[in-house]
Picture 1 (cartoon, rainbow, N blue to C red):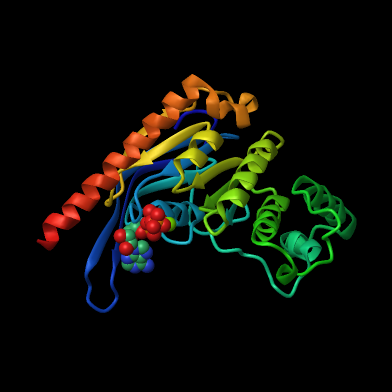
Picture 2: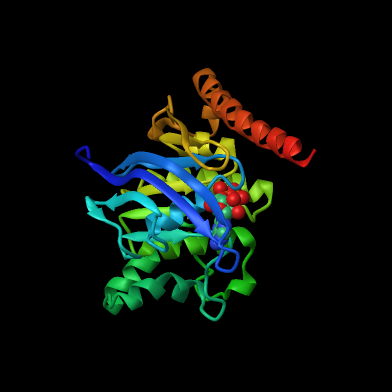
Length: 270
Ligand SMILES: Nc1ncnc2c1ncn2[C@@H]1O[C@H](COP(=O)(O)OP(=O)(O)OP(=O)(O)O)[C@@H](O)[C@H]1O
Ligand SMILES: [Mg+2]
């Protein structure tokens, strides 16, 4: 393992086995990659190629059938506070206010009240929800709820943040707003971020690198470096010729996988 790499996925293969029929599904096949400390890496690939599976394995919610996952040079054996996860569905507690949702993880960790309040205040400000501290989730829009979910995870300051399509349930406009907010916010974060998305645009703009996966069984098809450094990326980047080439490359790469998947399904059916 190279110095500085924080997540190391080495030759990971994962099968799911149906408990009753004993049928197996090969979800991931020989996946290897490394993510450096503080890096923002996006993962894209066709539906069902094993992206969520990969995040669950890194989170330690499941054990890979074969291969090894290390975080900070230690093998992952289960979930831990060094890894925080943000899911597609809003994962916030409906009976707690915005403030108390964000402070929840810190309460569990036993962070003293004063320190906790200071951290929560900072994240409320970072996600732009000042004035909504005492609102309950049902009083918030989808975008606001997802901001709270993000702040809730970040407040515990995990070394690694795992995000599984965190913006997928939002309307297009809100999704673009949150994407841009996350890009800005990421400049102030030192956490390592692994972000799964269906959206090539999201991946291209947010990721310092993008991992493109093949159709199932998911393998790493290629890993592409963003030509624009994160601190220089913003809305205007979308018109930068180098960025457009990069984005189009990613788009073609994923599309080729989706098309072979659809073609094979057609052949199998006929
Ligand atoms: N609990 C499970 N039991 C059996 N098979 C599963 C289970 N979870 C996922 N799979 C299968 O594993 C494969 C990968 O699933 P996964 O959810 O990781 O894909 P994904 O890339 O996240 O897809 P999407 O983009 O649609 O979210 C799929 O073929 C899926 O049917
Ligand atoms: Mg998924």
